[in-house]
Length: 116
Length: 115
Image 1 (cartoon, rainbow over the protein chains, first blue to last red):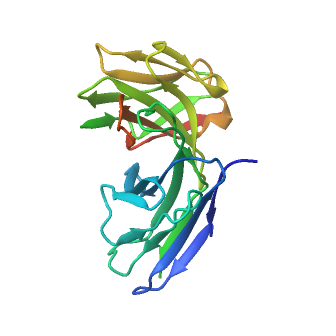
Image 2: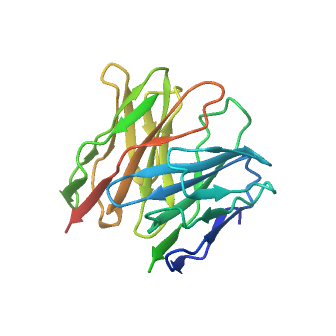
């Protein structure tokens, strides 16, 4: 089955530690996205990538970093510079070349990060 | 720039009653609009999308939405609520045209269904 996998489902981190969240897709999609979800806040875009080896900051990129070395993988690192990292993190992907903005995003199951 | 407003962070309906979840958007160019559903501790699933082909859009699980340009609205409806409809619903907008890759989401509406 094609889809998006995120691991782990639950992640605990001590303050001051960096942590990396995994996102893999086998949908052959060009674009990939990372969102942060907090209760009552909707989804806020952290980073996105339209093509391998290229990515752009979203609305709340401070304290996060990403890489896109392979088309199917888009890991997110939450660094110690992120002041309030406890949240639900969602990865998404979208097919289509430039101009196909009507193509929907497909979402993974999410990773819940808790800072202890 | 675009934005989405979802009126009502919580909506409660009785089982079998009409479901109406409101979404108003702001966009400087013709938009594409989406409704997603999220069950607890899961990712988002697409319910339906408006891409200018038809103003009344039918989606999965009996949901539909109507695009009204004059009202800048894209409200989600379902004639008869099921217990399984209890979830959080998100409206999202993206500008049509080349180079538009980002979705802007509303803050969500949590739907409760009372037996």
